[in-house]
Length: 123
Image 1 (cartoon, rainbow, N blue to C red):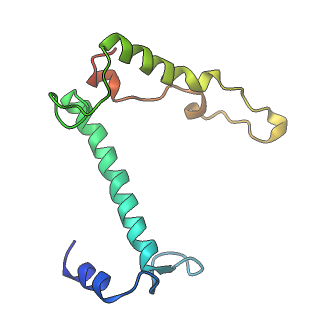
Image 2 (image 1 turned 135 degrees about the vertical axis):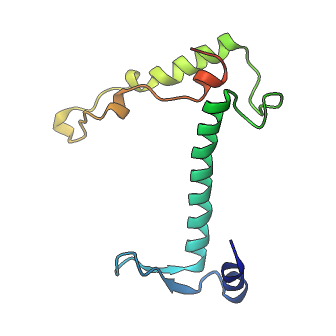
């Protein structure tokens, strides 16, 4: 990260207030705690997205091909598990239009992408 963030963290308490100038004026006052949590969660999310891409490219999940850190299970088990997860949204009751929750979003009805598809050889 650099010296400036380290110095800021060392010098301030977690409840110290700062401002994020590019955020809306009514939302730009934040504590150092809020900023640190946000940076940690954003970093985690982006690292996770990059790891999924790496898994798809390399063709394996987990730490390494030899040490996947994944629970045990043969290919047939993983295929069955993946299929169950991918079809679960279709088994949910659809909200009625009267409830105001109806949607045509493909993500609510569609298949869930899974790195296990290529990583575990389950096609």
